[in-house]
Length: 106
Image (cartoon, rainbow, N blue to C red; front, side):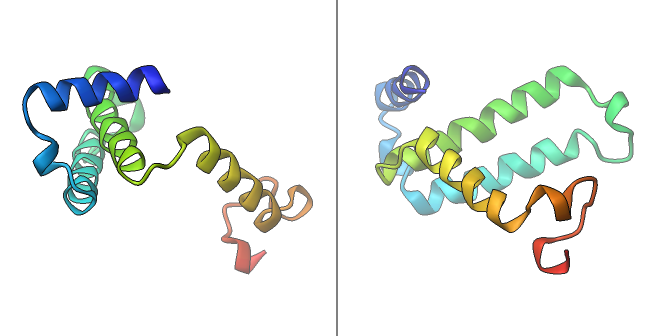
């Protein structure tokens, strides 16, 4: 993870773009890139999506998410593992297995 974040920061800093990468603007960019990822699937099945385009947009989503985590000093591995633990409590296997219901509807 650090290798990726350091490469992103070097790319950003070499271009003097840190001034544009505040948490608010990173959040906006993340949302926009997420929508560009969604566009890969618009009016088609998952199997018909252009995988090269999915790959490109997914990389953008990850890049902005990692930069946002770094801006707040968050450890990506730590926060994702914490979220998995929280979701394990919200979605116990015996109630949620095979179900798409939200935790408060189980």
